[in-house]
Image 1 (cartoon, rainbow, N blue to C red):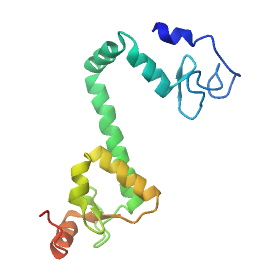
Image 2 (image 1 turned 180 degrees about the vertical axis):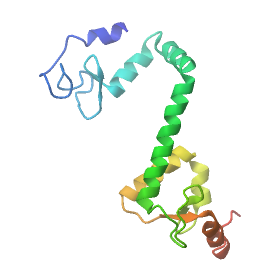
Image 3 (image 1 turned 45 degrees about the horizontal axis):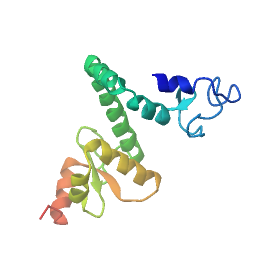
Image 4 (image 1 turned 120 degrees about the vertical axis):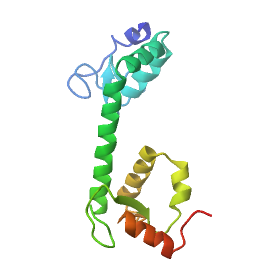
Length: 159
């Protein structure tokens, strides 16, 4: 971590972005969270990855804490899905079914199969969230039955 120590002595005003620094000493911004040694999180990670043991240390940490990392990821994805469902109304748009185990995110105008092939579930949720925040009305919540009925009525199966 010798590279990080080069930036330890450079600082700005106290009590703004971090305790000792006003801005990131590398990129000069304070929009990203503070990580340490006067660096924002992205600059800190870039420098850490270039150190000789940086990648080894990351791999060792992941190996030792695999269970905890997986639990955090699972909790994050569940929370993200819950947020999406609440933004989309928490119930089926057609019949009002509320059991979240059977609710599915549906493309209103079809074309969901093509989009699903581009993204995994995590990235798809990000795309839907971005679409909702941009107020595009491309998605709706349907229960599994209504979703399959809609697919059959509009002939939305993959060809």
